[in-house]
Amino acid sequence: MSVSRAADSRALQEASIEKQRASARAQEAAAAARRPAFFTTAAAPEIACEPVPAVQARAVVDEGARQSGLDATLVRAVVRKESAYDSCATSIKGAQGLMQLMPSVQMQFGVTDPYDPQQNISAGTKLLKQLLELYGGDLSRALGAYNAGPAKVEKWGGVPQIPETRQYVEDILSDLSR
Image 1 (cartoon, helix red, strand yellow):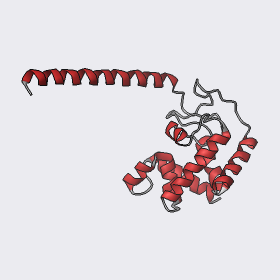
Image 2 (cartoon, rainbow, N blue to C red):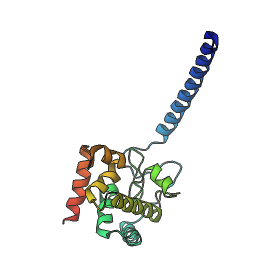
Image 3 (cartoon, rainbow, N blue to C red):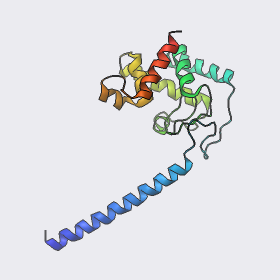
Image 4 (cartoon, rainbow, N blue to C red):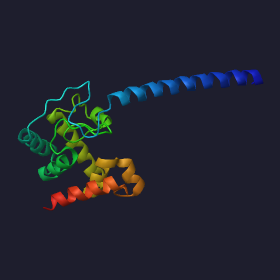
């Protein structure tokens, strides 16, 4: 390839990269504009949230645990820690609803309304069950993965050494031992 062809090719690559960067900046700005404050009770602007009374949420949690084959006490402890039974809870990181589902988990399980208690609990319990199966029933690892993601559990070879995650696992295990 001649020097001028190489320079032309390089210029085209750089122009393409700059377009991708501009697109990424625009997407980040749009996401930042939609991002709610940490653990607010206001839903993202595109989805309205009607709070569900805690009594009704508890019944949905128990039914979701039954349907997924999980211990209801475990699912209740996760919901208490994740959202304190606030069906409209949204974290600063974008997790939503009773079990604080991230958008990628919502997509994985076909959740169309993360603030709908049935959809949220169904997806959250399926995820938790998958994690328990992945880690051979090791509850600490499964909870660590629920909070920080399986990649972090793999990286650390167990519960990630992230203060928030360690506290999360300890709090739920302590809740279960009461």
